[in-house]
Image 1 (tube, rainbow, N blue to C red):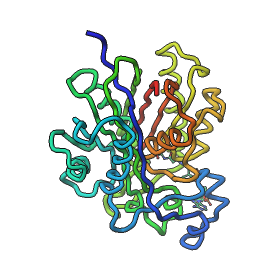
Image 2 (image 1 turned 90 degrees about the vertical axis):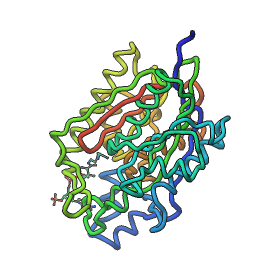
Image 3 (image 1 turned 180 degrees about the vertical axis):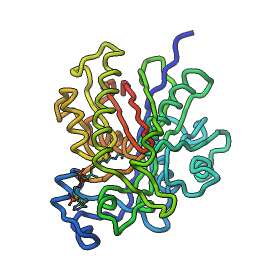
Image 4 (image 1 turned 30 degrees about the horizontal axis):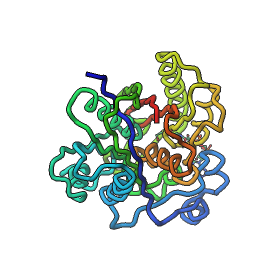
Length: 313
Ligand code: UT7
């Protein structure tokens, strides 16, 4: 029997209609467009409506990826949702999404690895396809970060946005996902966290910045070395979109030209687990990402958690 691989067969995304610009934020806290843009590369972020949940956003993104694929919703065997902002403690966002998509014969669950959630979910999906009889997996990152943000704290409220991105992973005879690395270290639990007393995000931004650059630079280098690849062999780096300066610093460490980076943080802000699938779909829709391109995905988030995926699109 020939070897089975997992592969992205389609992508989709959803961004809420409401846009909050840096200029809007100037009216809310003591900040300026220049400060935000120069420190983060962020111009604007999308903010979900009060009645719009992570399930609703995941549903919209899912419909698009299903439409762009050659399968029907009922062909989906498994749903993995990466989120830190579930609509309910339970049932999981994935099961609520299964219900909304009206998929009867399927199993569904959430994972929480903060901003690295989508990479964790892809890793799980890849292993299910390679080891089991599962054929089609819907993998989503969906976040309503606006509910975790203290809108009077300028240190954090300028950084985050809402949205959802989805991919359908199918089985294939040719390599799609080539390798995947995930990790975590709970020693850093208090550098980036939701404070249990306030229920708001708190972050030691400077410390997170440095460790994010070093960790993502290191895992990217290790992934390339493991596969005997040079940086020239990579067509696209699609990193977690937290801060354009973090992304540029990683690219510099890797000697990767900026033309090979998909950068969406300017328009989306940091959408946590949704940022990578949103960026993948953006790259597909803009015509940048082509079949058989070699892509390196990378993420870093609260925990700390981190991960990378090397794949052929
Ligand atoms: O998604 C998971 C991973 N998350 C990240 O990767 C985020 C990593 N961290 C960062 O992106 C950056 O550290 C920030 C964008 C959060 C902050 O940038 P920074 O260059 O590290 O600034 P800083 O924290 O050193 O703050 C510099 C100053 C402070 O003032 P003082 O103490 O020097 O007087 C802040 O109070 O900037 C001040 N400041 C602001 N000023 C205007 C902080 N936020 C703002 C603001 N507007 N919104």
